[in-house]
Length: 289
Image 1 (cartoon, rainbow, N blue to C red):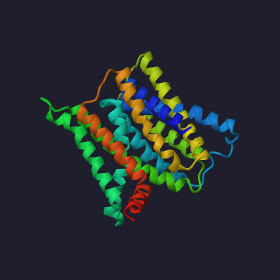
Image 2 (tube, helix red, strand yellow):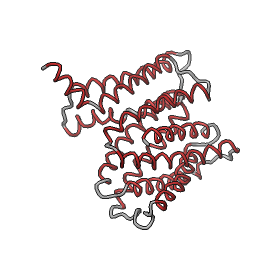
Image 3 (cartoon, rainbow, N blue to C red):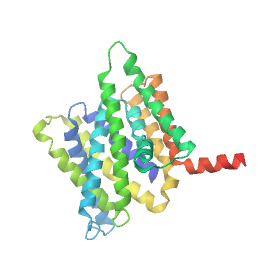
Image 4 (cartoon, rainbow, N blue to C red):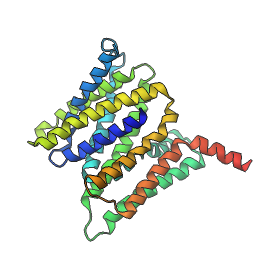
């Protein structure tokens, strides 16, 4: 189920990339979030949870989490619009790395050597991804916008995950997904006065596909978490880079620049090291002993 969720999220990103050719980000956010309500509500009805699954005692908590998540979605879609899918996907894995300097600065935490090394490796990867944009005959503004949006997406995702962790203590996962979709749809709709595009069939199909894939991805991820510990499922998240690279090559005929591809690989490795820092540290201690 976790692999299926990753595939659905990757197909959602592909749909967003296709829609971004004709439509602005706000319009895509509205369709992605609004259409996602269909599979989410269908899932609740199928499980007989429609009556009580959406009840909440923490509406302000849902609003706070949803606003962080909505900001992350806007930045994510902006990054996808300006970068190859493989690079935009790699940047999304920066979230756990960005938390580290924040924790050191604001909370006075002292992460282990594995986490520190992985964080430095991740930001080195960002530098390598930026390199092709900085050394060309012209400054690749689109690449800079995409990378900047990707970094902002990672930061807001880290904040959103913190709020999700707090909510899961009392709230059902379906309720969290539902209110997130509602808030994002409302925020997307609010961008209409700034200009929405009159799109063709391809973009309209991509709008609907992004919402359905996004909704089904949340459902599959919920089922996966119900069946296995989050730590066990974490490695399968990185298969998203494989799908993204395949879509870039097969659908868009895009091969990332060598430096960009190396940078993306470093970010994925660094994120995996942070996720499994405790296990890596324990093994290192075992070897030293």
